Length: 156
Image (cartoon, rainbow, N blue to C red; front, side, top):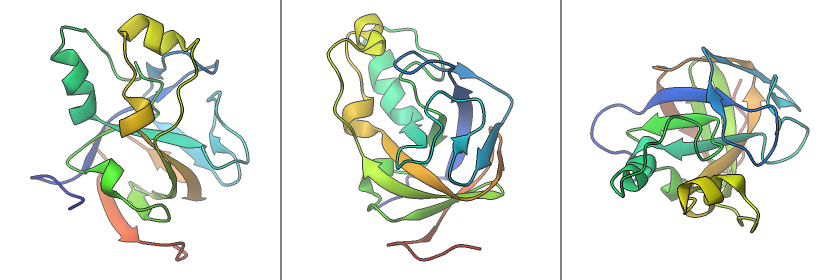
């Protein structure tokens, strides 16, 4: 099951100028093909252009007493109403006017991660997902997230 109760939505959008640091909220993300997010340290022609993390995952850490803002785990997009880790690699998500393809579920966390040092634990390695841009445009907080196609089908 990919969806939780209610409609899947973007709750926050975030960028950082340096890798390995928390990101900060911005009014919108500008996505470009073969690049990722304009102005973000992780931009480039590779498979982890964009990171997504469910607000429900961040809430688990808040329940441990941490005060966390969007981007605390270096995620670009915070979501609600969708089980990100249940999406197969290759799934295409329409987010606002854009589309992204899931390329990786989770990641290995390096030992000198500033985020892990600050928060004590990082949920990105187990609960974050990564994607590449398949349709350019902007993503705003509040945009709907729609599971469009799976396994590499093109979205135009």
